[in-house]
Length: 309
Image 1 (cartoon, one colour):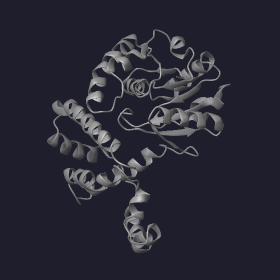
Image 2 (cartoon, helix red, strand yellow):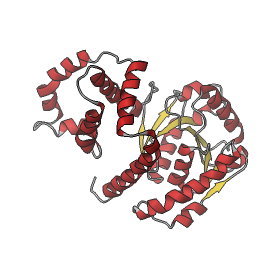
Image 3 (cartoon, helix red, strand yellow):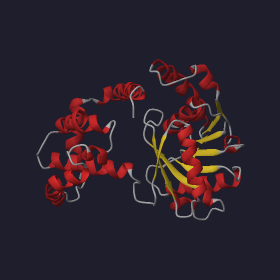
Image 4 (tube, one colour):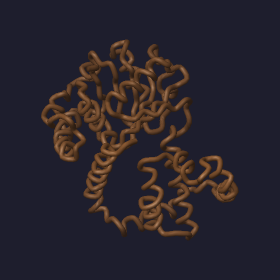
């Protein structure tokens, strides 16, 4: 199996290590903070038995953990790697410096991918000699439970790099989605921004409460969206398919969109929504709720794995 280099051992880096090791790949993981590198393996060791219990780990946790090797230097993480997944700070200066260093050290055949949530590959790879092998591979948090990964090349990223990364992600059990050109926020974030912005607007306008917005999504839209995308959803919501749906509801869409002016996240609005969330979930219970989220995702992913596509 191809060797994977994980650069950055924070939450996303650890999660990527699980993704690749679970699929059988040997993984080297490194962080500039030695404490983070050391802690990563312990964190992963705690997660693997839970994945096994949920039916999401084919091999014994000990076997998967043995494929992950914490290393002391960036050079060791990149040595012999076919794919490098960078998970450094979400700052342009940091990524520019790190990719310049990786481009010099990594095998010339290795793909260099960033987990950045919003910085386009063109912003930090343009001057590199190996820029054709660089792209963004944006995961969803946490990637070992939410499998979609956006492949976002720069204009100079080679088609071979995109194809290789897509094939690798499929081998790793992920669901790659290729973004054909760079756009701010990629695709998943743009879809999320559209929904979350409208949620803020509806609360700001006194239309609905914070709690009831969440209920509408998780007990309404979210149920369908857990196994269908938006286009398939509307295609199945009219007897004549998507064009029939647009004929029926196109006027409503136009009316609603005219009302959807940009919603500024003012300090006052953020404070109002935050107070509502803290009434529902005090901060002392926040960490426990994160663990609840991951267990629910495990259960959902395990259920989906038993169902026909």
